[in-house]
Every structure is written in C-alpha cells, then in structure tokens.
Image (cartoon, rainbow, N blue to C red; front, side, top):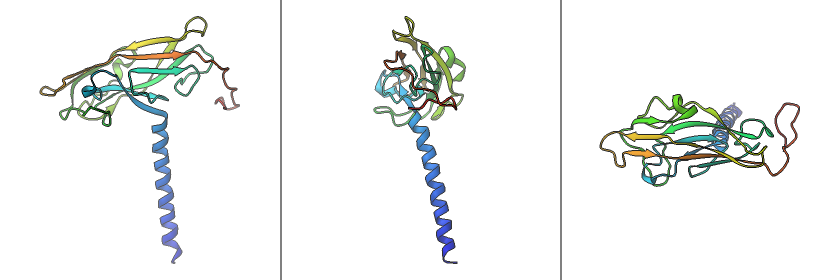
Length: 185
C-alpha cells in the first residue's frame, strides 16, 4: 500500500517529463524570425521557420541541412515556414494590446496568414524553394515582404519587413542516406 503513491507519483513525473521533452523538441527545430525593421513593431509579423533560429530578417540555410526540408543534393533549399503575428518575447517589442487590423504576406504565404489577429497566432506551415545557381555552386535568394498594421491608436502602427531567404551551397558531400531514407551523421 505504501508503494502505490510512489508508483503513481513516478508515473506522473515521467508523463510530465515526456510532455516537457516533446515541447522542447518542437522549440529546437523552429524559431520565430522577426523582420529586422523597427524594433518597436518587430513582433507584429514574422515567420516561424523550421530549423532556423535567426534573430534578423536574413533566413540562411545550407543546402541539405536541418533547415532544408527537401532532399540533400537537389541544388535547392526547401524552407518550411509559417506566418506568425503578435509574437511575445521579441526584444524591444510589445504586441499591440488591441491586436492587428490587418496582416498580409506575399507568394506562397498569401493564403496562410492567421485568421485571428487579436493575439499571438501562426498560420499553417508552407514550403518555399530557393534554388542554387550555377549547378549548385552559387547561392540563391528570395525576398519576401510581409506587412502588418495594428489597430488605430497603436504606436507604432505598422510593421513593414523584408525577409531574405538565402540558400547556401554545401561545401561537403551529402551525408549517406539510411535505409529508412533519413540522413545519418
């Protein structure tokens, strides 16, 4: 009888540790990237990019690394990103208390802007390819310029950012593929 509470507590402790580990794993593979414009409005709109934790509007990836969700050796970086709004924790920025009046993103992100602009939210992840140049020997890039406007009475009112998604050529061979198709390093 004395052993039951300890076993039950141990089970709750293990379940809590597992949940915390799963939460931390998600945080390790993606990160919010603010646009690098005015610091006071940098949290209004930005991107959550898989495998990237950059603090600026330059989103750089080496072809075939964790930030490239496509295959290694295909002469492109496939970025996986989601448009995010009203993100807390960005230095020098406080999300507008009344939320955003509008948020827009071009290209593949156009239809994936979160519908709820009142608080912190991210749209669905989408992929975007940035091709390398000269048969994979020269980097490639693609500019994306999202815009957000806070509700009237908010200062600053707008966040106009320019993100540069950059694909950098590999300087080493691609790692061998495992039988499961995953790369082994």
